[in-house]
Structure formats: C-alpha cells, structure tokens
Image (cartoon, rainbow, N blue to C red):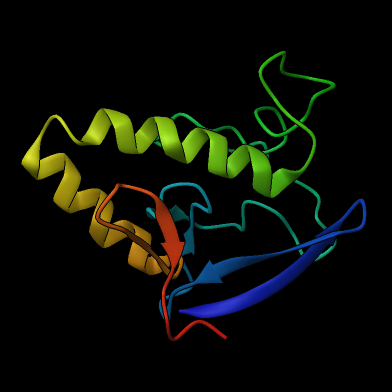
Length: 120
C-alpha cells in the first residue's frame, strides 16, 4: 500500500492506495474507492464506505451531531463500533482484521486497534 499524506485544518493524516489504484477506507481498511476519500489538501470525497462512514459528513461536527473534533478521532470512534459489531461473527471479524492491515492497523488481544509495528 502506498501512503498518501494529507492535511486539513492543521491535522495531518494518511490515506492508503493499492498498487491497482484503489483507495482504502481510513476507517475499516476496505479497498473500495476509485477516488481518494480525501485529497492531498484534506477535502473529503463525500463517498460512503460499506462500513457506513461518509467522508466529509461523519467526521464534521458541523454536519453530524455525532462527530467529534478531528478527522482521525472520528475514524477511531467509528472504527470502535465496527469492531464491536464484527466480534459476533468469526467471518466478519476475520474480514475486518484483513482490511485493517490495508491501513497498517491490527487488533490487539483486547480488541483495541493499534498501529502495526512496521509502520513508519
């Protein structure tokens, strides 16, 4: 996966792109976008992932009553809910674990999402 650095409102974050040009959801790691969820200047695509996250809406306190300040904080908030829903099904859990590797995250023994050790 190719990391692409972005910045919005003073917050730096990374979007990942596969070798075939697809972009990963920064929340669940699914490879399902032909355009980046955010461009290099941090502008959202307003696309919606199958995990239910809409870029530019669910991460904006001005748009969503559930959003908190900070793009990455909203990804983490949404991801926790996704992990909680996935643990009830071994298949869903295995899929989520695989997808999270796309964005260089892994699940720890207590189901917390942590960066992979080889992340730079």
